[in-house]
Image: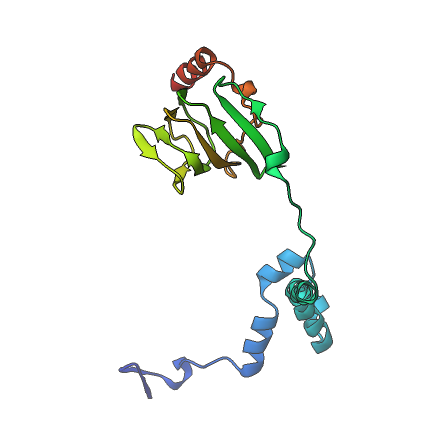
Length: 207
């Protein structure tokens, strides 16, 4: 009779630990890996084949390391835009204009926006994330005033209205929503329509 965890058990019932070979075999050949790689168990019976399997799994990391080494050797050629040379473009708001800088469909729109003195837009919301960084002048957004150096974050579906008594310029980025796929229609916003059209859409969505 042998004691185990304070109990008395027959010798035949005593817990036996798996062998080193059995543990190694389990770690090298988990069943979920067969399903992922679409291989049969019989293909991984030899040590050299097991090594080949491990090398295949680690390949993406090795490729990443290679790219890092290549990037460290030389400086990249970066794209740039002289925003001062671009013309202001009209938007659906008559007193607000933009200078488009970059558009990555499915990722983000980047632009500079300018609101004329006394300009305003009506309350509205978008199903995607945005931010603004004030460069000049001031903006009053939902009753709070923001001046140069202010960063304003707009989570998706945040309803807001903007007023600029003195006029102002800001840097703005609009991101695609990765969950819904919702994103900006265009830099100028004409596709959103008038205040009445947007109000009608909001009313329909609220039903």
